[in-house]
Structure formats: structure tokens, C-alpha cells
Length: 275
Image: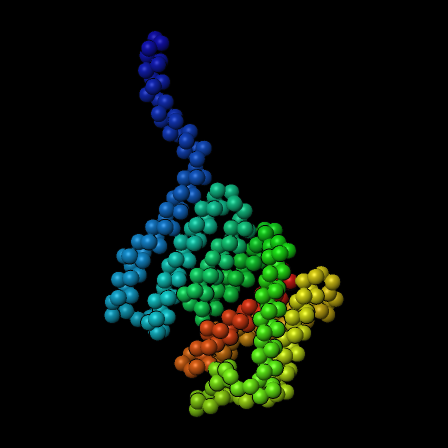
């Protein structure tokens, strides 16, 4: 009888062990599956889908081919980032923190591959808000973001002072051009100095609000400044911002690479202090 029981136990024990391991380790199994899926999705997708597609001549989605390749590559790999985030959540990482880091990683991917796309500042703002919700946006991190905005504001103010006193460098790239190729407007010294004042006031506002000693009107003014910066970043659908349709001029190229990202950088301070 003992021999029979021992024999049956030896037969059942492996199945019990497997069942026990799967129950105890199910979160790890799910996470590994998601990580494996994300890696395979990106590696095999690049090898078997994206690169062969980009080498072919028979496809078009109505936008310039270079932009289309970057858009498809970015969207493809952003899916992998989402799966990595799900794996972290399954393992017990806080949903807010994981979402924040995933959004920041996706924003960085967009910025590197398709800087002229509106999605990356949205992911950036969402990531910062999620980190703030999860308690991970520490005081040093907050002041680093505020410092970035202040540095951009002061630097831009200095450049506008240079233009106000007669400097000409970069003027051919900082003003939108009309259909005729002529500058859409010609700012004078007064306009440049007004921009200088606005930038310096903005820098002072985000520092005051960041310190926590701001009055109601200072907080409200910071919100208004953020709204203005957001409108500038989104653009008018024609000449400036993420939504512009004219991307062939020297200004448009500089706006995609430098000016609109700098506006987003300026807005970081306001976003940070208002979170």
C-alpha cells in the first residue's frame, strides 16, 4: 500500500509543482510574456515589416515619404513601450508612475523620430502629470524643469535685445514668409522689447508660483501664459506650430526643429508649477 501511494505521489507531484509555480509566478509569467512580445514586436517588425515596406516603391499615405517612414516607425515602437508598461503594472509597479515613465519614453521617441508631430508634447505633459500624481515629481525634478524654462526665456530675451538694437543674424529664419516669399511682418525695436519684457515676466512668474508664495493673480497669469504658449505650439494651421501646412520654407524648417520645441520647453515651467 505504501509503495502504491508513493508511486501515485511521484506521478502527481510534477503536475502539482507546475500548477503551484504557475499560480505563484503568474504575475512574472504575464510580465515576461509582455516584455517578450514587446521586444519581438519591435525587432521582428523592423526586420520583416518596416524596412521591407520602406524599401518598396509602391506605397503612399498622402504625406512626404520621409515623414511617413518616421511616423510608422514611431507608432510601431510606441506600441512596444505600452506593452512594457503593462508588464511593469502587472508586477506591481504603481499605475501612475508606470504611465508617467511610459509617456515620457514615448514623448522622447516622438521627439527623436518626428519632432514636428503634436503628440510628443501631449505625451510629455501627460507623463509629468502622471508622475506628479504618483508622487515621483520631486522638488529637485520640479526645479530642474522650471530652470529649463527660465533658461530658455532669458536666452530668448537676450536674442530679442540683440535684434532690438539692430542685430540681423537669424532674422531670415525667425519670421514666417508669405506666399510671395516675403516676410509676413517686420518687427521693430519696440516689438522686440515687448517680447523681452513678456519673457522676463514669465520667468519671474513661474519662479514665484514654484516657490508657493504666489498670489492669485500671479497663478492666474501663469495659466494665461501657458494657454498662449500652447496656442503658439499648436499653431495656426498655415505658417507656425505643429499644425502648419506650409513646411517648405526656411522658417518652417527652423520652426519644426527649433522654435516650436523651444515654445514647448518654455511651457514646461508653467505646466510644472500648476500641476
